[in-house]
View 1 (tube, rainbow, N blue to C red):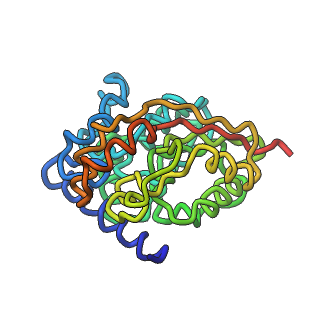
View 2: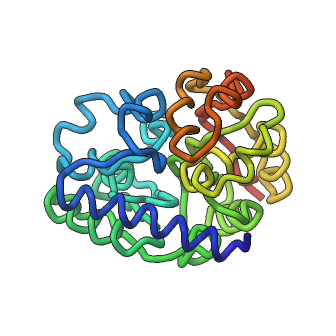
Length: 272
């Protein structure tokens, strides 16, 4: 399957998710058929005080696996870029963290998600955030224009992660920081999962191994690379997701037990 086909499927899936939020105010995560199957991934990521002042639809559209805005050391006056900003929750939270002298950008390739994010921005009244249309493999910002890059369970969806990391390195200023939440694999992954497009769209099949993640970041030029597990998923967490993708959950679930995790990945662009 070509990179463009995967990209089109991701657009379709997340566009549908945005339309569900717009229509009914809720959605399911990671392409699963029911939100209950995703609780181990998406539940309890944001503190109530973080989301209390955000539009309900920004919270409902959150499809992430972590909270990079809480883990990243965002400082007043900095410029932040959120790769794959979805409904805008992390872009809005980042804008609040960097304050009126700072700036947050959200980048997304899905028109429906961009429309939802911009609507959430208008509702929230946050002025120092801008949502851009584009791909994380081709960031529409100049070289050295960003202090911090965040992302929330999106890089794993890209079929060209080397390009993503190269673009992140390019737009960061010297000394700039990458601070992303992502799904990471520990050990070998069953081939049936790797071959499943449904799970690729759902943030499992496209996930990198921990060692490969470090190697790709280093290849792009990053240093001070760290991968910190935040949640490790058990077999039962994956059962409904696997079944929804047409796979034999009973046969595969034991093979994935403990091999998938949400992780906070940090790296830095050298100062010179």
